[in-house]
Amino acid sequence: MEIKVIISNPARSSNRYPASQELIDDILAKELKDFKFPVRPLYNPRIKDNGRTIAEMYKWGQLKQIKSIDIGKQDRSDRAFLIDTLLHEYYEAVILEKQFNDDYYKNISRPDIKRHAWIDEQIASFFKEMEN
Image (cartoon, rainbow, N blue to C red; front, top):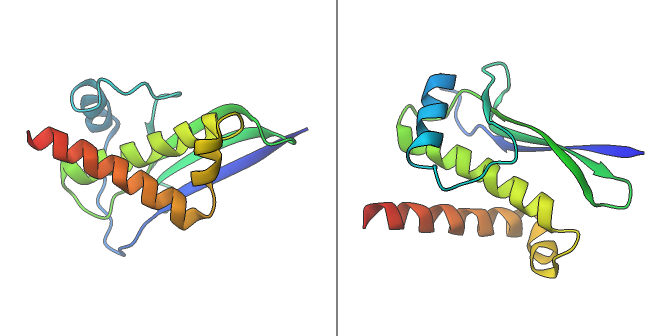
């Protein structure tokens, strides 16, 4: 028996800006070329979140597979915000992949506030490195 897990990066604005698959693919080929996403992030303007990672888990808590990473309309229209969303979903997938066998990732996976604080640190570090 598998359990479906949906982890979303909720929209924080009522103003939503469309992205595109072409823009997502361009960012993946340039700024995020060193990141190995478990599945190709796909643009889905129908979701109400900035991004969403859908995974299938075994009943004992181990990841079976990342089913999809969906990227929705964004809170802001700039490229940096879309990069932030893509990185957020990437790190959600990393945690899902590693939390069963790695105590460090198990520790940061719950509660949500702890997980998101760690993800935000990783994203801030990425942007800081980009500036240099």
